[in-house]
Image (cartoon, rainbow, N blue to C red):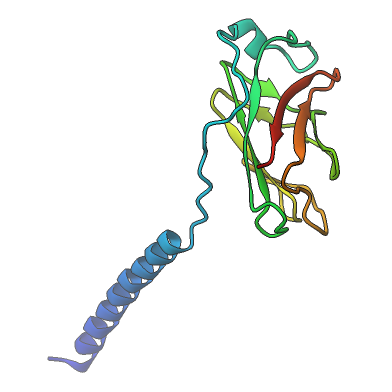
Length: 169
């Protein structure tokens, strides 16, 4: 066999083996280093039947006070800045704009949401630490952990109506 053909075969084989190896290593890495945040049932009451009109209310329109449109599902990593995260989920149909909503705690101050829209069953995670905001992860930018056991978290809409509360166990 000519030397250049043999070299070409080795080169193709090397590319194939390298590609498969890279794929396997990245797949293994993704599965073993993925951070899973379980969503558990909340103790917050859910309105019996939120109307679609309330869920689809434009950003400037007030949602009736008795309608549950959002809930705080859980707080993970309490007291650990790098892992501390609050999980918030949309309840009901349609879109919900969180622009100018605040998340408040009795000891931790308040976080104001950016222009963000949650769709039906959508969720967002708010980390206490610094980071780059995405559509499903927001970062508060604190230098120390925000939450403590026993503290109550409150979500307040732009009109000042309390929409959800959660007491950290």
